[in-house]
Amino acid sequence: MTLTDSKFKLDIKQIQLDFPILSREVRNNRKLIYLDSAATSQKPQVVIDAQNNFYETINSGVHRGAYYLAELATDAHEHAREVIASFVNLKPNEIVFTKNATESLNLLSYSFLNATLKSKNDPTIDKRLILKPGDEILVTELEHHANLVPWQELCLKTGAVLKWIPITDEGVLDYSKIDSLINSRTKIVAVSHMSNVLGSITDLDLISKASKSVGAFLFVDACQSVPHIPVDFHKLGADAIAWSGHKMLGPLGIGLLGATEELLEIMPPFISGGSMIETVSMSKSTFAKAPKKFEAGTPPAAEAVGLGAAVEYLQKIGMENVHNHERHLTKLMLDGLKEIKGVTIYGPVDDRDRGSTVSFALDGLHPHDVGQVLDDMGIAVRVGNHCARPIMDKLKVQSTTRASTYIYNDDSDIHALLEGIDEVFGFFGKK
Amino acid sequence: MNLTNMYQEVILDHYKSPRGKGLKEPFQGESHHVNPTCGDEITVRVQLTDDKQKIEKISYESTGCSISQASASIMFEQVDGNSLENFDKISGEFLAMMQSKGIFEPSEDLLGDGISMIGVAQYPARIKCALLSWVAAKDAIIRARGEK
Image (cartoon, rainbow over all chains, first blue to last red; front, side, top):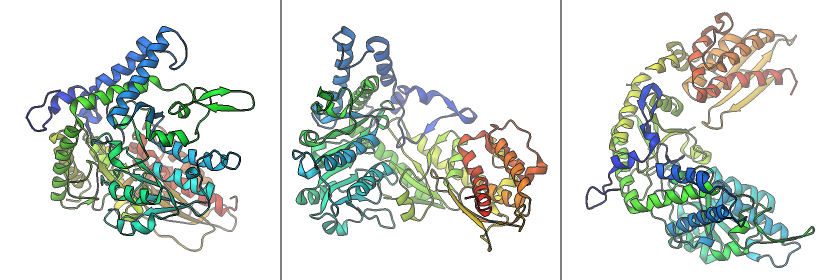
């Protein structure tokens, strides 16, 4: 990794060479212009190699077996946990490996359900985890379904009531009623750090202070933030964060839950079985300490090792540099989109305090058709409701076109998108 | 641009000037279908003849991409006033074409302008768009026959 000037300009050409997929051609032998990293990121060779290397040289069951390979595999798995933990300023035992961020959020939701159910027979369950009818769970109107549906389900099962911080018609969170929305009945506040549709960043300072003042737990969906901006768990003021590995250059199939030692200690397990126990008899079992308490079954160790390599790769570049590069691309994209007649941008139109995910519409054209014509030019964008249907309803659109960047994107990718949009209008005879 | 295989003139024409759009009364069966990934929606209404053998009137209201809208318009043209027996033949032919990956010789007698959708069959992500109205129509017919 070389920095080409003293400030923050990264050598993107060099970085692009680290990603083998970027050298392939797509439809019509076009160069791939990948602008869908908010859905999943591409993987550098070091990540692919780390995962392959696991299978080629140390594959065996981690945390079981006293033989040489099992020791190496366990070491590699736990080293990955250390690397990932330090990346967000947590301790290794505060990181739980899951399948994906959706599972991490379900882990939280089900743990509260399990605590509530168990409390009828178990007086040792921590009272803060028990939900009663009339208790409140607060989300926002811009959540990804993964941070909405698990809480709806938890409410249905416990009688708790779901509330949400609304968004304005412009797609900005409206905090004006925060003092009444977070009240003595509020037990859980679950909010995204950065919107996967609009790129807007949530005011966690405000929400965390309000949550603390009433003793509510604050859970943050950090899927869109951890890969793109420096995140220090302790500065968020949260009790837990959930995010995925595959959006931060890591393999598919591995997600993360980061939480305070205290919370992990009091939460009952979600999935039970092997590896998560201490002692087992035919009538009852006791559980291992966190994080193992939450990691039942054989873990995806090669994926964890691959993710560890992804984090090390990001650390070499530096998250400040990642953020600054993407902010530059975001500004380029926003300025360009504003210039094109017939384009509506949803969410913040200023590159400050926002991520690099930009949703927009082309007048009179359906996003599916927009995406199809862009695809014909090798440009991969996301079209649809981005698993956040309530935002679509609020913006009064069916779906949007979404472009999102990462470290391997450069100015030419943004120019290609902007020119592509002109071609889309042309193709459908709108210009 | 290869895209012209998918977006043939006749498709864009149906998209810009959809035939038979707008819900009609009376109806015996109504079906609302949604494509959850893109939010495209269609409502189809069906009124059968007294002997329940023929579609007396089919009507629809929909929002969505050019492919789903054109497909609904073509569906209307091909099946409005047609027998249920023919509906099965036509919708069967359309489904077979969409599942063919584009290697298919569709019957123009059955599909009319629908043969222009052969290009869409080469794009797996768009097949659902093309089928949305047909699936809703089939469901509306089942409801109109009182089978659901």
